[in-house]
Length: 232
Image (cartoon, rainbow, N blue to C red; front, side, top):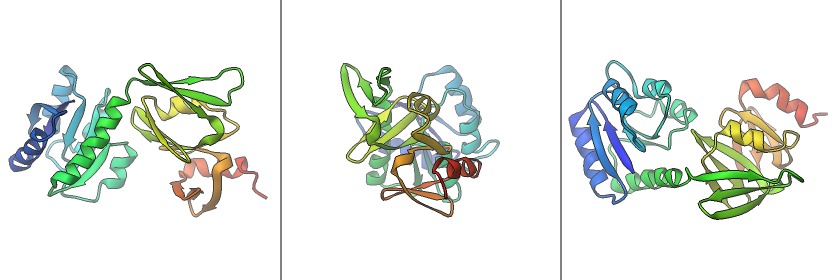
């Protein structure tokens, strides 16, 4: 995976570079002192993964993410916890607090690698009955019954499809996934979550409980959700 490091602190860049050198599947292509430099680099070069600081002069890492038209996989590495919610709303792969340990770094890059390897996966739907979909990765087709899908989580240009016994990572947007699934059975309850209405067990104070999984309910989706669940 081709990657770059973006951080205004030279010591931090050196630390991340040393960690990258220990991972066989990572190839460091550049280091940038600020988001503007990185933004211009990404306009010209193809990069798979960006290790990005948050608080930097001229433009923050969060602002840089928002301004990218074509977004690589992003791992935020920062000394601040304050931006975690905002970061995950932008569907970053991971959010690491400095100082970074090798084990924590490996967890993050393994997650990024999983997303990267899912980019060739596609969804094929059974148009006749619409009771199952196929997830295609290279030459392998995996059948997933619609009724077994509990919820779908957005990860930028990818999604995680959760069933009771497995998780599939697919290169498709949440909007694209929403269009593939039957609208009478699934509802977008948050910018990052699409869930099966049949699998919602409880709703409490802006949270829907799908089995053991608490999923946030966005304010703009709450009113319609209450209509869809047949509230008495």
